[in-house]
Length: 371
Image 1 (cartoon, rainbow, N blue to C red):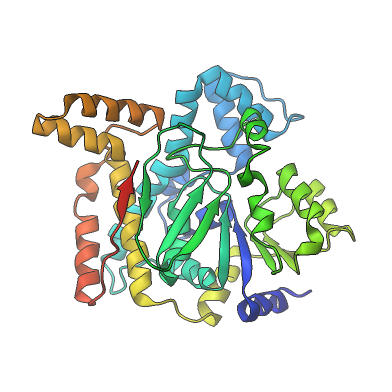
Image 2: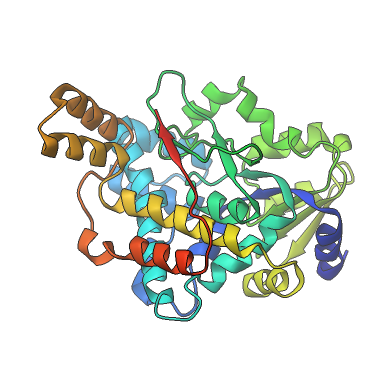
């Protein structure tokens, strides 16, 4: 099938959408971004694993799969340090990039970056959405322009987690079967084994039941995902796999008559421009709400993280010392950065974006945080 035919089919019929690292790279990267920003773009499996092995002083064994190698890193570093590394890499650094993008965009007539508008166009035709990234910001930018969104992620029992929710009568669901770095994640072999009997493990394929499935920016190197697709292939209609390159083993699997997957090589700039040029324009009020909510959460993260901020406010007020201490403990368990990173640099960004949105006459999203 030609890529144009597949894209038009998705535009006309909608689809269940799976997204991975390609989505995060889109919202984080741009040819116009300064070179130093590229160092903050969340890495894919191979680069992440190599970085963690270097930090753990481990010898790389490329014959092992990524979850096994990450398991060794987690055991060497300890759970807390491993969690903090993931959070900084996939959430704090991404937050910094988006806040800097907002600074630059505020100097233009359109204070929303073009990359964000392109992502919103794709998000309009997708329902439901399964995001295999472990940060929440890409999900908000993908799904929230079409209306209030609720993120559902894998969470370990009894582990503290702070969730952001936007109360609404109607909302879209975005599933995170690999969890979120603001709570629990599924990255190591031990975590995969612990998840094997959970609903989250099979959720991604079940979400595509009876509809077309579009896979965007994913390597499909996770064997469990390929096994799930093969097992339930007859319950899914067409499967379109968009990527810039296809690893050998997953590509061989995809070509089989049993799996019948259309592999569609793309140039990412052309792919995202296609949606911007042909899809219906996203609702401007919804797009503003998505951008404001994203920047608000990013701002909290670079100031130390939400639990850290709450603990700091209580301590400054001189009340709730026990609660403040517990919040600091939770911040440590969640791997929050705790220290303020360039807080003065970004202090006015969220305020300025809010003012621009209000000048347009749009409402701001009402987000409630629960523990």
